[in-house]
Length: 187
Image (cartoon, rainbow, N blue to C red; front, side, top):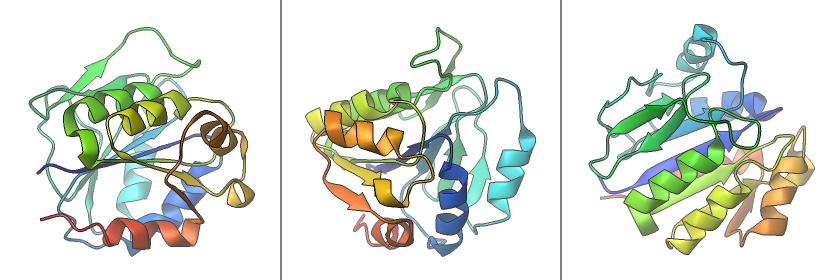
């Protein structure tokens, strides 16, 4: 497994995820990691809710879990989620970044360091600039950067900041996201 798909978002992004997840193929050959800004306490309802919308297995990982194809990993509340060089997950309780923990920038940067050109990173609706620096890091490692079309975003600040600060490969409407993910040609 050499490919990873990352999704980051904040205010307004859950609505997009609930539209995208039911349309994903059940046999994806890569993992998806979702980093959503949320309150700083465990909220098991998010994992449950997302699990009801997809045939893929949605989990909140534990520290040192090994990434597996066909799984959707949700960054746990109040932890940064990083990818280690051996493709395991590391959970970190260090300082907030962009007032956020989990931070989208932290996950995007650590994944790009490991998966390089096989990193796909999508930034959705949100109200701060978290994720823009992470997309720059993905691009610097020859990965592919995507943002939700700001016109379609419930809160467009996050995708607008990404477009202003990064070279974005694709700007997608919510109804185009699942098709993009399903079409990734991964051996």
